[in-house]
Length: 151
Image: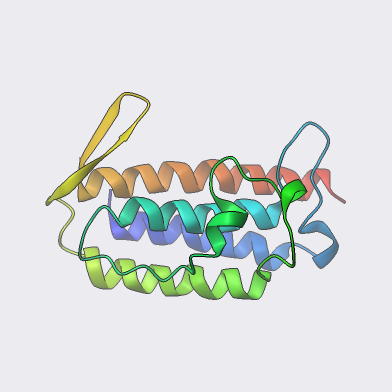
């Protein structure tokens, strides 16, 4: 996996955010726990958390985003005004720039700390980039489905 594929996935998520109408952003379809805004913010926050396993990565995501978008959170539990889509989009763009500056040419390097998930151990930069692509793609598909469901 490469920085290019991470950029592709994040840009696809940005395109969904641009397509979504304001009244679609926070609708939680029946049978689901989250919204379009939540999925985009979640990708941003999880990408940041995983990349932070590399000590050279400098986080661009505000700490306050975790209370809105970490795994296990839901818009149903939000207190206060969530970050705007414009703000989330800006941070996704900043994050991509930081990823490019930090990881291009380093894909085969070992991480100082592996990323462990569901019995898998991601030990190289390319491994976490691959996980990020998978995770982003999964949430991108969810947001596309939400756009179809929420008319």
